Image (cartoon, rainbow, N blue to C red; front, side, top):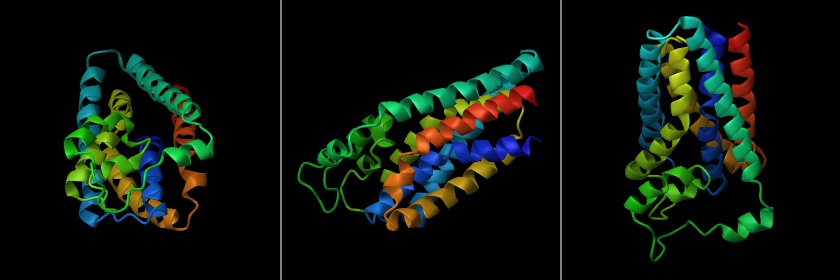
Amino acid sequence: MHLITILLLGISSNLDTLGVGMAYGSRKYRLPFLSNLICALIPCIGTYLMMTLGEAVRHIIPVPFANILGAGIIMAAGVVLIIQYFRRQRPANQIASEAPSRTGNTPGAPSLFSSMKDLGTILDDPFKADYDYSGSIELKEAMVLALALTLNNLSCGFAAGLMGLNIFLMVGTSFIVSLLFFYTGIKVGLLFIAPWLGDKGDLAAGIILILLGIYELLG
């Protein structure tokens, strides 16, 4: 049943969730339980759909090739994450100078629609999801954040389907890990060690995915 693969995929696919939680915790943001639930549920739906598609492709092409292709996609996703990590490295004083204050209602705050247009950058700056600058991620904002997390996980979901992993076990694992990572991330962020841990999320996820792809090729 590839339990190790499922567990590591669930963890690596949700390291962004952990990083977002730590970022929110470091600035004492609130993430109500329903918002946390939405942020875990919507990416799981995306994972389910992509795994279903991957499983359908697996029935069309030879199984050995499907396994190799799935492992290759996972390793490619890992390489992309590592590249993103090094591209995001900037001097700390530059990042601090660019970070706006996110507490309280700010004149000219962007609309929810403009936040939707920022899906590709929300994981780089999770505070963009708080479009009204309230210091709390409400339900509508959680949906935008959840979509950003979903887009980040689609390739791994497709690869998991290609490799024939159990869909319901994979989705269930991702759901539980996501809930725990958001909660844990916020608590860790409150301890003011988020900058040290959160900055390494893409690097850690990339390394895990590459090793996981190698494991599947050799398994």
